[in-house]
Image (tube, rainbow, N blue to C red; front, top):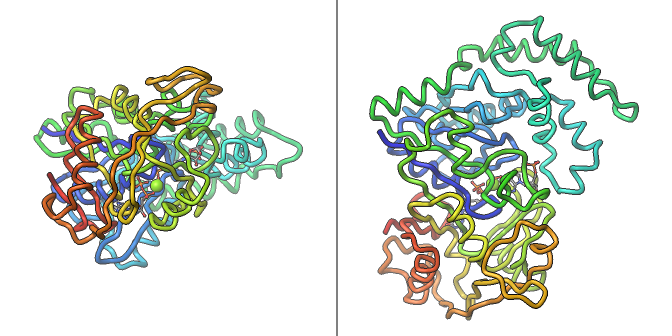
Length: 415
Ligand code: GDP
Ligand code: IMO
Ligand code: MG
């Protein structure tokens, strides 16, 4: 019995996809428990580069079952495109199971998001995530189980249409949407089922189950920088909520963090660098969104935010990714506290006006000159790079087990 969680410790895009794919080599099941196609998880391997939006990265491996658990919202149209891209790259056909209790994202959820101004204000991925979770909470949503009953689907669509009718939006055509959903169901009904039972049985049978988080801790609807967050539970607490397995079944909680910080979309980011360093990190790190292509905002590592992420998730270990991006910088800055007004603050604030005005207090560490993408053991890293990893470990009080030095699976150091 072994449950391993991969959780973003920052604002997303920490490299969860690479890690999940890598660790899935020894897993039987890989489970996505939150979010939907707002996620863009990159895997680079012998088939090429792929950005996954719904399917967990392990589903790319033969013999590994991908689970899309009920905590997700799933866009059948996007999922189909994702499967086509996998096929186009000549990859094995993924084995996957969609939870019968997961909710469907409909075309009108995307239109609602754009029409409401929320998309622009928050800088969302425009995938209809917020409206789909909102309809779920309003008891108007359609679940994948419901697709078996055409009357339920038609009835639910009629209620949604009436509840959200808006003169400035093109009217939804419920019958057309219903027909497309029925077509999807006809093709995929064997892949819709009891994900909760499947995961619990696998754990009971002693199988290894990976839980692949989407987004990051600071985008969590409760723990993140509200309202500049996503609409689901992105932390380790999303696992019992979104899969239905007891927390105790998750034995290892791997916090994934970049060796610096990025954020895409609007919202506070205390250690953001809008000058040359930010640009340099963006170019060197290829920091452009895997879902929307937007340039990511970049800055130094933020230990205030990371200590908070550690407190929330109880990470048992860390994976530090993209260390290679920092090579060549004469010094590396780390934000250890915030200045808010005239006060020095060590804790991550809940109040938006405080996080928004927080100024970083930095500690300076020596950088290294050498390229490190070829390093495969800790000993092959320059002393300054090793010292940086030890510094992070000491600051957060947990071991760094994995260090990423490039996007490919082999560009990884296990400590
Ligand atoms: P995710 O959303 O957490 O899965 O992360 P993304 O895939 O959105 O973004 C991470 C990006 O960094 C992808 O382009 C990865 O291929 C790349 N990447 C992951 N780990 C490393 C690393 O250690 N070094 C470098 N240079 N790139 C990495
Ligand atoms: P992965 O899993 C980075 C951000 C959006 C926006 C906010 C709300 O690849 O790390 P949403 O569309 O969810 O309503 O947008 O959340 N966001 C992400 N940022 N990585 C992601 O996923 C993200 N998913 C959503 O940019 O600021
Ligand atoms: Mg991503």
